[in-house]
Length: 201
Ligand SMILES: CC(C)(COP(=O)(O)OP(=O)(O)OC[C@H]1O[C@@H](n2cnc3c(N)ncnc32)[C@H](O)[C@@H]1OP(=O)(O)O)[C@@H](O)C(=O)NCCC(=O)NCCS
Image 1: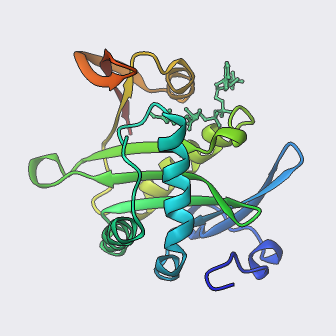
Image 2: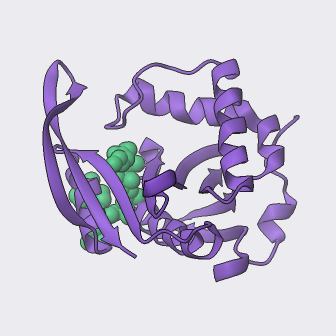
């Protein structure tokens, strides 16, 4: 099948810190492969589309609410790859059983905000609560320190006020809530506040 997860990944040695490009780690009984985004991933667009659309279907507490087409997802992926190549973004993708099960990203803002990195993370429903979110957040923070140009001084993220699990994860990793903006997200017909959290790097 074109674009499958190569079997060789599973046997490759883990890489650490600066040289990290791939790591295999067990969470419970699941062996999860986490890789940095790279050029060949464009040929795997449908896996990325399946992942985001699974979150949309579930009505997860993320910004996106409309399912993506293959074309939209390919354009999105190409833009992400450009960001990675230009060192303006670091991006991790976790795989299990030929499915994408998590993504994490930090991208730099521009101009007078080029010292600010924006963090986002999402895990597929069946893979939550086993430590993957914490692992990926720690990993992407380390990557941001070694790969982004300039190295960010501040990492910022947004979440909805009702996303208690995400809130706990970020607080445990040292993020502090710095702002609350009323009525920024629509969920199930309700207007929910946006919380902004910051990590001084
Ligand atoms: C938020 C999210 C990234 C967390 O990832 P995760 O892999 O489930 O988190 P972890 O397993 O690392 O758990 C983080 C902490 O939350 C706790 N937690 C996880 N799931 C929980 C649950 N269902 N109930 C209570 N606590 C829970 C964990 O116990 C852990 O705390 P601990 O270290 O003290 O044990 C994940 O739930 C997700 O992708 N949600 C949907 C998308 C989303 O909300 N993204 C964030 C937008 S800002």
